[in-house]
Image (cartoon, rainbow, N blue to C red; front, side):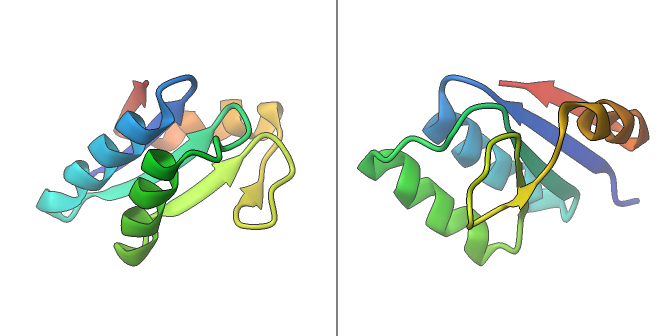
Length: 88
């Protein structure tokens, strides 16, 4: 049975994105919520490219043209509907 997993990303963005991709191995639905603007370093951007190839959905609390914007209130409401919430 497919599970819905939310990954809340704060500081270690490249590690969080890499770990999120690993969670897709069991065909679970993984969505990533960026709490801070995406870092512009090679490791993070490389991991992001891989995650996008897997069709992962990204949301950002800060305006970023690559992701869907989400407010803190909407985030709080949405995380209630996930099977697992992983802060990273």
